[in-house]
Image 1 (cartoon, rainbow, N blue to C red):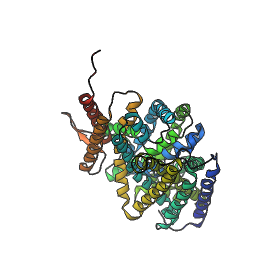
Image 2: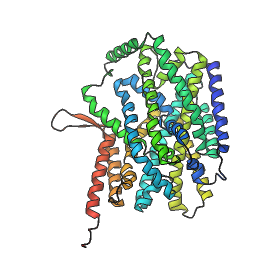
Image 3: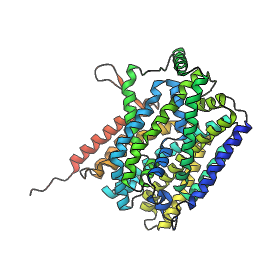
Length: 490
């Protein structure tokens, strides 16, 4: 992949980035409320997003720039195993359809803004509330940093080296998010998703024709995997359980993250969420097409130093400069939308479940909004510093742990929607075991998310997040059985 400055590609990139910047600032006047000095308005868009806005917003912060870069990169590196993202983004939507409308109603009826609010309202435990909120913040931080990894990949392809272009992009993001709140990424998501669809559909339609057709694409990928002695077009027999559990665990974790929950809480009705659970799999189709770019990278015989460069290199090598600039702009904008929503979701957690809970319980609505705005700026700066001064692998490892960590908040957040049997002490004990145990297993496995298990036969590997969740639930049940007061005889 070349990194020489391409004036045409850069010009197209700058045009679309400028367009999005204008939209970001215009968003503060889009459906403008009487005041933005309220966390419901700044952090949740007034809880008034309908079906289409929610579809673009949730799709925009769920299918991120890093997804566009990382999924094809994983397929390029390991083959079929990299497609686990497809079943996971299918399994997740029945879960969304059944659970999220109930969670939305609980939040709407009680004025809850975050998962921590929901948990405290259900169990009245500051400790459990803090555990859920803290998990949400630390799981989100590396996720924001990885959006910068995706943006850095396309900036490098454009020839814009160094940290300055990345810093400028995120300063712009910080400014319009500060002024417009959630309305900014919601409005930008329209442009971002349309651009991504155009770029990916053009890629899967035209690139194979330039590479001798899909038969040659698959044959080239198969030959490349055999030559290096790892990876394959089909799953190996020892990968089935790992693949299935990784997909299931990722699906259960996906809508526990603050940014996806923010999209849910911002919806105007439970029915809007159900419609989106039906419509959002359209993005999974796009993701499947996008993953095929990994195989196309082998057929194109790309010269890349990292799998993360595969997608930029394909566009740079096989398309004219103007379209490469368009595709790179789509990916970069695809970093801005989720990064904005993630910083808003994390700042909402800090404001409601730490600042208001412990620092200033009497904070006004305007004060809450101000704290959330300032916190969102600090979070973005923190993510930028991680990318600038720490190895990218650091963010990758933390994000991998983040998925396992955020999954441990599921019992506290979801079980109370259906039953009052669980108590805060049991759920907090379960969270501690799941969080600590999951982290320990990842650490002893060399920061890999899989644990080998043998039940007397051949060993198989299981996603650690599910093992930690099983331990979490078991401990919560056990502690609850031991501590729940006995019923008095009638």
